[in-house]
Length: 181
Ligand code: AR6
Image (spheres, helix red, strand yellow):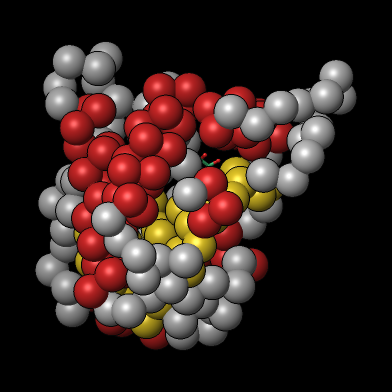
């Protein structure tokens, strides 16, 4: 099971996978953070296709082509804004992962990369978001045999170390992986 999930530190726009997931807002018309990076790398055709979609509610996902990205597809999902934790944030974040993976299965996607949805501008606490991400992906993969590879792409050392710890990999005193996952 864990052979199908990996954690890397880097930029999601550079991932060589079938689909990358975008942490979008409900307009789907671009923004800052990973959303801005994906739109910049994919080019203006991505925005043009997004305009045809009519937005996306929080917790759901929509798919477009990847245009100038090496990923053929972009799955846009809208994470919850953190409002203290009592506004359904956990369940909404979990549904972002499930709905993104369900779209991937529907479209025959074998490899998919996720950013840490909602943990930037939307303020979701990183540790809690990471536990939800890892649990949902693990659960989904138990019944989705067509997905061969899920990559968690961490932007920066802190996110990387959090994912590695939640995945249960041993780290040495320098915070490096002792062995490949
Ligand atoms: N590759 C991978 N991860 C990245 C990259 C990148 N190139 N750039 C940032 N991250 P955020 P959110 C990480 O703020 O919290 C946008 O304006 C970042 O370090 O991008 O879901 C949208 O339009 C953080 O860990 O998304 C929405 O309005 C994670 O991606 C709003 O932000 C998510 O941070 C969504 O907020």
